[in-house]
Length: 98
Image 1 (cartoon, rainbow, N blue to C red):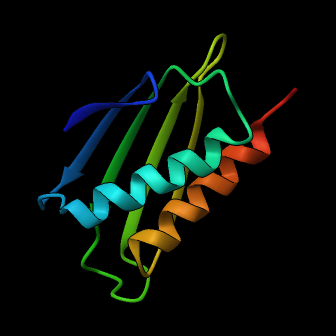
Image 2: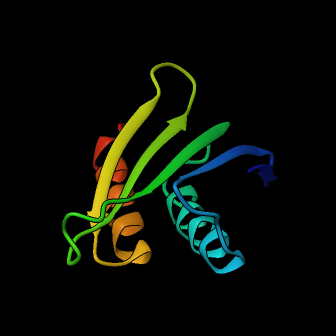
């Protein structure tokens, strides 16, 4: 699913399931949270995957932020999509260099 948020190209991909509107809203909310710390984001790719082997930590997120220069990348996991998105966004924020 490709769309734009505040002139940022968003590519949201899910592996093995279809995204719900609630999940899209969670991704957008977390992206807006990251945007407060970094204003030069031009694109973002978010890949969501469920792993059936570990039911307590089975939501995995791979997140790339397209910024001028070298892109940023982080992976996160958790028991819920919200927790895994937050894990990945915190790792991205730690990479920000002003």
